[in-house]
Length: 410
Image (cartoon, rainbow, N blue to C red; front, side, top):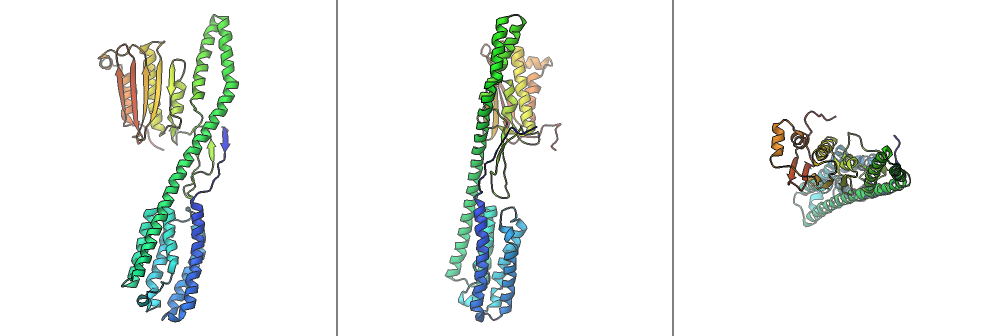
């Protein structure tokens, strides 16, 4: 089936400039380390150790430039190997320059080692940065033997700076996710308005015309007009509630970019989260009012289907026991830890003890179709009924639900 609409929302991830900056930093600091050796080579007792290491470091830096181009390429094995190159260079410094410990001179990789720590910070946040900077700090302290105040100052500076950068990256990612959600809702709102205009100009006007003319004709046509009027009310409720196919934010986690485009597609299949609103909206009509949040209420397919089935069972009970003229209301509440659906009617209510009597007679509609479904999901169903004041059924499903028995994940 063709996609209803595709809207491209292109923006750059906040991480991409950081990866580009890291690429430039590694090249410049590699050149700095090489030039520093060239100008101070007379101080090295074993220059061949320094030359060998710097050659390896230079080749490694140039060969791995694509690895620090984005988060996808900067894998964990690469980060480990890159950090190992930096640590080996620090620990080899006394072998190349015997007086390095006494004069508190620079290590062989100098500030190039900080690039490895920064890669950890950009890739994994402040915790990864703390891990990498701690190893670099330990290597520097071991290399110095008796660290000076300047050494401690530099170690602490790298440790604090890398953790700060990692924390900023995490905050930026959270902000991008919030923006992605806002763009998603905005796209869905625009699509809803477009559909509402199209439906109002066509289907709703036809249904209204059928209702008027059929009512005027009378007889069997009047029944047709009544049905057309109910469908018009249901369709107006559906359109005004904003139930268009849910948007899907294209997320490229490896690049750190949360939104590359926003697509308005057909509803997700059973393999992805399901918007509970789209399952309950068809119940809306002349006798059933439907109230739901403005944003999608996403649940795992099995949980959404079972909860929708429980709502259907509750509405069946309303039609069967409250009478054809009873009015029903469906309310969805999207809480952080659970989803709550309330089904209420204005019927005569349930006499005290009637449910227990029905279960004893083998009529298990409430026990199995409602409470049983919710129990399988780890949720609950509470029924409150006062004779003469209607009945209210409150269905609760936790965000993390158990897979219903008899259903297997694919």
